[in-house]
Length: 324
Image: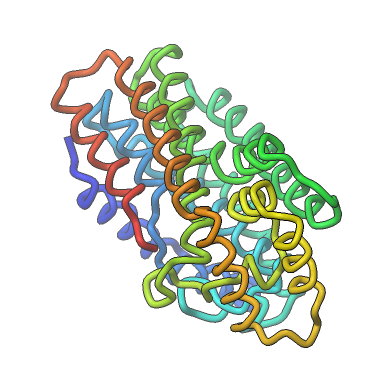
């Protein structure tokens, strides 16, 4: 079985070999740019590893796995535009390097390219993989809409937030695991266990992203720290704060959020201080551990050798022990 490092090397090499020989180049240069920025390549790597759990022929899953990565980067490109983000992976976002119209159109091209790559799935499984992916793509759009809707809602419950990140983040990880397993020859039952494991791992991953956005190291995180605070986003940390804050603290939060003259660094420091006083970081870490354990529980039900499972466990451990 391939190691995670070997899988990453296969994925990266294949992405570097993508041929951008169509015109106009002004459409494809932003596509090449965002894919060249690197990133963790978690989704295609997990797809190949899930395939490898059941087959040594991981190349069968390579083209659709690259399609999943192109789709993921398409969502990031449009997400950055919606959030008016300046940086992605310590580099300028596409709409900043070019302009918003270019980000929209090149993003659209990436969506089509994703379908083209996923369409290279071997014919017996093509219909199933396309169905899984199409439902997933719609769910991600639904999650993004909920994320935008939350900005206008006066209150968001924890359950509503967890459902939003399930749609926006977790379903694509789950889709990659299920698709890779099916391509590798897994039964539907086994593939569904991997899908559910991916949901829980994706929830843990997104909650960790929330945590890193506030408490991470900007040099390793790849984005400006405190972006969620500056945008008044209703993240898991924010919801836990508002659930536990006193009346005076809630009023202070509202004052800070509405103060147009508050300097960004002061706003971030003030909200972080409230997080710390209410134990929000610890609460978030506990919830990350909860979803991690649920993911591992699903994996433990797979009918695989201990050796193969152990390598896969190690991959999940590494991903959820990240600092970036």
